[in-house]
Length: 192
Image (cartoon, rainbow, N blue to C red; front, top):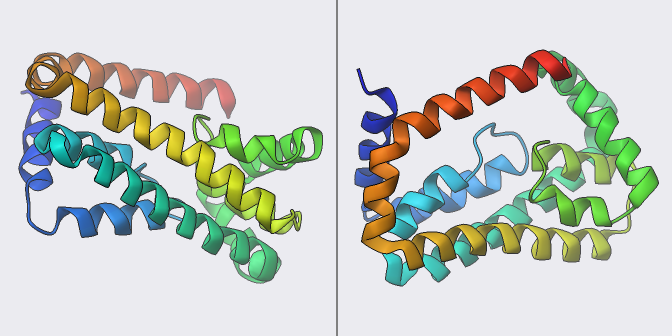
């Protein structure tokens, strides 16, 4: 059974849907606050499906992600103790939150910039920035640049790879999928 190839084929079908960009925007916003799946899983197939729209999708993903980051920042600032702390503890993000706070204290705003490429979910950084009452403008700029670089890189790879990239992705999607699962399990076992 080829689980990841089936998922890939479905993702490519959904990527061509007329409302796909709205789903991408919503997912990008939600991922910055609470949603566990990064928007790259939707951005990449959409950029592959319509390479001429890749830059548009990257911009949309960046803008919605930064807006979600603002929401995460405000939640951390205004509602951490009363609302978010119990949720974070129940979801198992407490250690990641503590790590992000430690990095904020040591590296400052640069952590938000690097968060776009970190294995720690961006939502942890957005909420941490609010909890620590980080200066908002540097947070906003670092989020826009860091997230933008990540999403435009994904779009560029998909756009310039085109049909050749789509064929290669489909050919190796099972290996990539199972490799990712193994890495995620290993990371969980090592970091818990």
